[in-house]
Image (cartoon, rainbow, N blue to C red; front, side, top):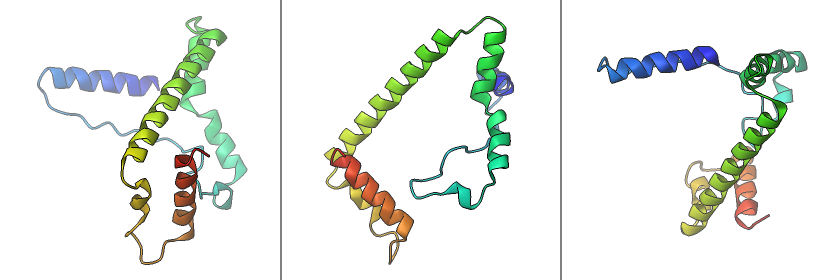
Length: 133
């Protein structure tokens, strides 16, 4: 995470000097499911996931900052609460925008001649959310 911070600082400085854009490639591991219809246990071993959990940059940065006395448990709880509030607010705004549209479920139409099961499940989940469930 600190390497990403350093790379973005360097890229920003380069851009501000007028030296053009920089592409930064960040490779990480998706710990959660890919979609609501995904079951990663079908293609991932538990050992693989556990190994990548140990490499998760967020807890690693938290441990680093704690060890240096720059972050305490209360800070982490506060930050996580603020982030959750931001996400909840963004979801509320997205829901309101979807409701404003004629039919947000149209995004699932006209893609396939026959909708695959995973897409049908995602459509059902979105319909449930739009209806407040």
